[in-house]
Length: 218
Image 1 (cartoon, rainbow, N blue to C red):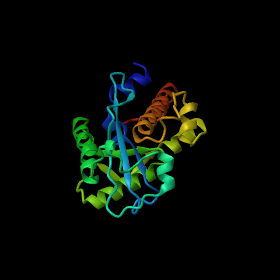
Image 2: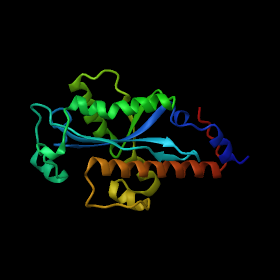
Image 3: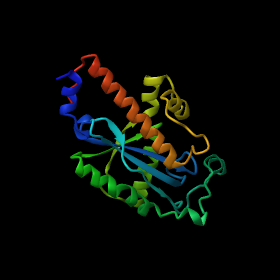
């Protein structure tokens, strides 16, 4: 049995990341301050293993979110992401309901994969985690499925793998398709970030196995 096959034979999504289920998250907001600016869109893509024990994207979960009462809507931020927070066709949900829509299937997948909790994966992940934690605090949700301060940052990983930290440039360096016209929607950015994360980790696992580096995932 090859070194790569030996590593794969014991690999699960739970032991690959020390019990954590990676979930790629992107948020669109009305500014940069998680305490005062509104969460307007949130999307999530859990990462799982396929039959070849490669990381792949699971189904996308997404929701438009109503601005919380008293939130500040910065015109420049709305111009940048193209969101009209009060457009009726957004079918936006209150924050607590939106988080439930995101969290429920993630909690189910955590149990199905024998993980202990989810860990946020994001491009400049502390921004997304900051807004997620602020929304959890506002809505008084107990037992968030996500680790409250740890995350995987694809900006850092992309800098290591491709010498790029801007999402669009990292995606192109990874030879993943990118459409500028679809960028800055939570769903599109999440799905592309998820592809990027999977590609970097899969490449790393293949390279270490080929180099005979025996990493024990337990």
